[in-house]
Each structure stands twice: as C-alpha cells, then as structure tokens.
Image 1 (cartoon, rainbow, N blue to C red):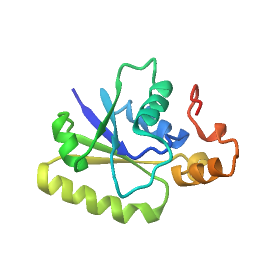
Image 2: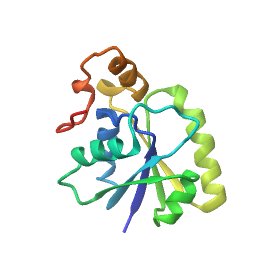
Image 3: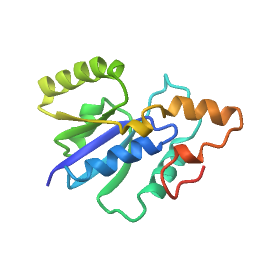
Length: 150
C-alpha cells in the first residue's frame, strides 16, 4: 500500500488543500492529513475544529484519514508508516524551502516528498488570507472545499 501524509497547520483547510489531496489520491492508496501542532503559531481554530472541517470535506472517502501530531513531520510519517510526504506548492517562493526540507527528510529517513503544483485558480488562496478575511467578517465559502462550513 502506498501511504502518504499531507502535513500542515490547516488553519483553515482550504479548497487548495482539498484539491492537492484529491489529486494525490490518484497517486496514493491512502493519505493521512496530519495537522501539525506548533505552539509558535497563533491559530484561529482549535485542533478539534480543524479536524471537523477536514472530516466534512472527506466524509465519504475512506482513503483519507485525519490525525494531529506534535513532532517533526518526518517522524510522524514514520509513525504512521507513510513512505511519502505530499506537499502542494503555490509559488516559486515555496520551492526552496520545501526542497530543503525534502532533502533533509530523505537523507534522515528515506521518506520521499511528492510535490503537486496548486491549480492556478487556487494559487492565490492561503490559510493566512482566509484567516484575515474571516477576522474582517468576510464570507470565505468560495475558499473552502465542497460541503465545508465554518
């Protein structure tokens, strides 16, 4: 079985994240969406709410699991027996950072990183932008996956 993790803070989980997972399912038998706990990041939504949001998006797909973790991402991958880390890139600016982490993970553990480029219609959407819009009372329903409400 080819298993991958899709790690992130997902505060909130956007349609761009959803698209990467959907496309990743053509490559992997199972994807575990790993919600990283990072005390240095100030989040808008609790872990429980983020899990609920992602569960709404994938309620009918048994190939997608959701789990939080409080460790290095590559250690989480090993813990859940995933040989791959799935990542999405929105811009060239994301590439160097992701490459450095991917090279480190592969060197330390052999876990490979698979990168999918975000579809152009979602490339401007980020969790940061979504949080900012929420803080000003804007409707972000078009930034969210189908069947997801906040």
